[in-house]
Image (cartoon, rainbow, N blue to C red):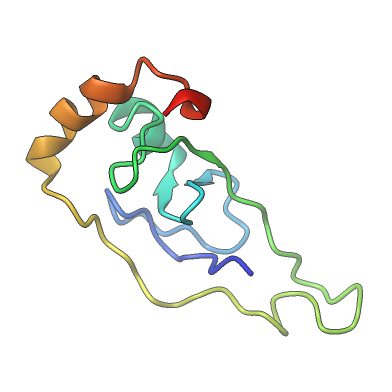
Length: 102
């Protein structure tokens, strides 16, 4: 089950469970769409993968055992694990490869 992390790992923008601009990689690294597009150029700085729009977990339990009341979003804020100054070189090295080729 997705953690639904509460913030962008790069700029620390709040990304609540219903945020339409939250992006994740296959490891659930979470960034806002602005950072993915303008700084990261669709390259996850942690794994090198690409990003997809994070699904929105329903607030309402339409089925038993589902919804935010049963599986709440994480409150644990996660921050970038790598030196922001080193990101441009990392991104430039692999951004020309599509996520499926990385």
